Image (cartoon, rainbow, N blue to C red; front, side):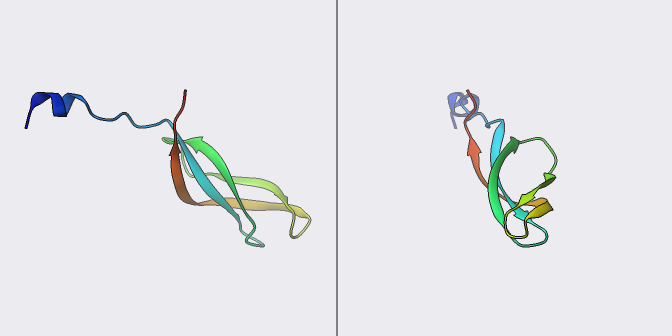
Length: 67
């Protein structure tokens, strides 16, 4: 293995796209958070039940290139 292969590692992105899901109705949407942050939990309007609902992060979808 050559030394240049070790030095040319790909940099990780700072942002990640995640899927958020309602705890009440199962409504889903996509948002962006920082890679090193904790998993998201937030209150947001749920169009299925017409009230605010708790949304939890379900899974990581992809990395986002930050510029």
